[in-house]
Image (cartoon, rainbow, N blue to C red; front, side, top):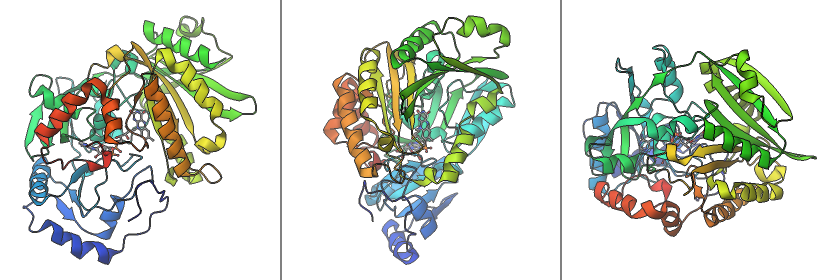
Length: 467
Ligand SMILES: Cc1cc2nc3c(=O)[nH]c(=O)nc-3n(C[C@H](O)[C@H](O)[C@H](O)COP(=O)(O)OP(=O)(O)OC[C@H]3O[C@@H](n4cnc5c(N)ncnc54)[C@H](O)[C@@H]3O)c2cc1C
């Protein structure tokens, strides 16, 4: 096995002989299942790595559940045999978060049913991708209110992290729009929870990084879907202009969607861009929407709603064709309080060269109204306005090595915490338990108590390295 944190951009194929026989023995006689328990080299190899390509840990088996009951039966079985278990959605983690060395990975992709109910809610199994859900809901004129930038992530995967995107100023995060969950706890209990039924479990699972339960199904709020979107891309004259305008715009709720980016340095330095969208906006709205904004250039596009949501898909194709999509991705994601955003971002960008972030890097700056993010996790900075600041790095040929990028992430983590910021825990930062205690801050005691209550033997999701 490659030790954690060594990049393995092109993982070695797993030797079939090493896996099949030995690991089947670890599990002993397993319960009858609706789905299948896989020991083949292909299944184990696929579950050994992730989008980050930094950590490689082969599991002993992969469960492709045919039902939520399968997940519960195998969690009970693993618990009795002292084996660890993790759910895996689309494996878009960047630091081994969905991996389990010599344990069981539950590939939730087979839990893939979607039901759009007449009461305007969606009941989805956790392996469903957001792209599948929104296609189904749009057929009924409805949409989930909050999205991530990339739609090919699983419902269970983003609900375990938080799910932040450009609709946050109106609708909060994805976890703020969950009505009920069906989960399997670390004791193997299949149960439901909601804000009123077992709320401690509900709140420890949403944004809870798989530490207390595996989500098997979610009931989600839907809202009427717009038909088209008018998308403005505005060049901001400076970082300070970008953050000040985002603060004003999100405060007054002028746009339905609001994000921003810093573009990798050219000889002239960094450039800044705001993306702001008005649902069902028209040309007649332009003067009201952008007439008073300080910008040096603007591009206006009208897009069908789904194409708007899915608009990074063509960029992903380009990255795939460049080979960048398969290279190591030592990502860093943070939530900065508004009071520190300009200083931290400008200091960070001043030290970044193209090689520090790679050929296909993206630097995100999204405003976040913390009051809209009412679910306790993910942990937010203690100010009304915060900013998601993400350095989406790729260890491209000729750029810094993946190890250098991970080391830089660790320094960035310390700088973030020092100003009252929080890590958005989806990226690649080596953390100790003490770091996690600092990260969770006032929520740590409750989170730890929930972990002991619902996963007393500590078998769930070791790849997060929290406990
Ligand atoms: C290209 C790209 C774009 C992204 N954009 C955004 C964005 O805009 N906003 C944002 O917030 N995030 C974004 N992310 C991060 C993403 O939301 C998280 O990494 C998410 O966890 C990935 O979902 P997944 O299905 O791939 O989960 P996996 O990587 O498979 O799993 C992630 C973690 O969740 C656990 N898990 C997975 N499924 C379940 C389940 N059903 N029950 C319990 N635990 C489970 C796993 O064990 C693991 O610990 C992006 C990631 C990528 C690669």
